[in-house]
Image 1 (cartoon, protein in one colour):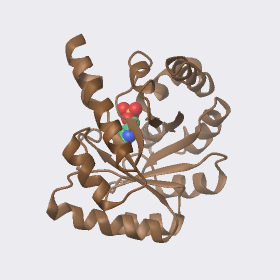
Image 2 (cartoon, protein in one colour):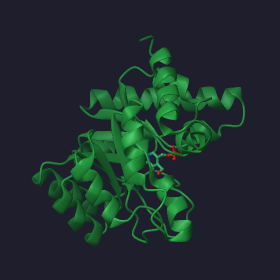
Image 3 (cartoon, helix red, strand yellow):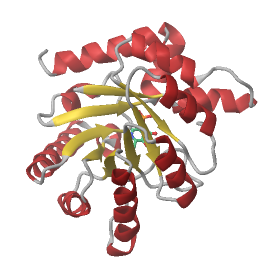
Length: 242
Ligand code: PXP
């Protein structure tokens, strides 16, 4: 199980003052020292946190692979083609949202643009992933478009109100993982995962990558990024029986 650390929220603090600290690129080095397997950044169209300079520097300096989250918009796609990160995860994006709210819309009208974006990314050698809700129909539609992987949205699992709802959401995630694997897709998961709720998701057989940001960046304020990552890695390893 790979753990990718999303450092967007380090940039959020920097952008609150439009200054040069804290620098997500420097924090990424600490995450790597703590055992991160990769670094995730979301370059949003409105540039509210991560800036072009951050992605550019990360791609040139990180010791681990970069997962670039992006919406299917021409300007950002062109940048991704230029940067050629290890991996690109296509995500939905709305200007007003606080964070990515749901998985990609893969209805017929949207799927054409997503399929073309995947083709362009594959043409420059980028591994691709689609951020989707853990629903069988959406998993099937994803497979038709031919990405390398799907990232299952764990938001509903994370927000589940009681034990029964948690169990239901976990079952959805497990079933979506089995189906995606049967259809030849690699499976990632993320959104809203914390030190408290990561275990059962980390234990899902067939899931090979977690993307976690907010909870780890929050904990790093108290214990530093290196230790925050190390603690999360330990929880994941324990859940998988490693
Ligand atoms: N995966 C995707 C596709 C996301 O958009 C985000 C949030 O930027 C995450 C994972 C990480 O979510 P969180 O910050 O809640 O851990």
